[in-house]
Image 1 (cartoon, helix red, strand yellow):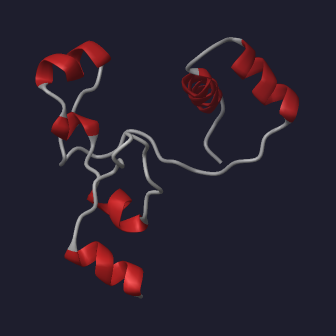
Image 2 (cartoon, helix red, strand yellow):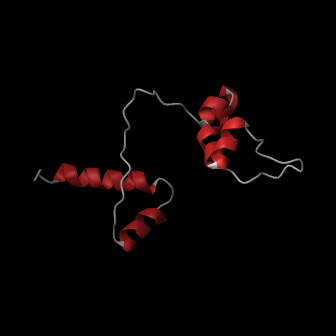
Length: 100
């Protein structure tokens, strides 16, 4: 309880006098903002960070799914963006099979 009160009263620097990062608290994480909000546009562009329209609906839904190890290994072996390829494979299957 005292830690919460301390966090509300004074915002402590993230580093000490030697430049070491201190242990972060929940209040620290709550105060963080997305990089796209704090970086200059020129740097965000170079890093490939883009803002989304806040009213846009998410294009994908995060789920937890258990799949066979060999299936995941084959998709991952093909390189980055394996989740998009898995999504495309499932979409292709849906297009070739009648609705249940």
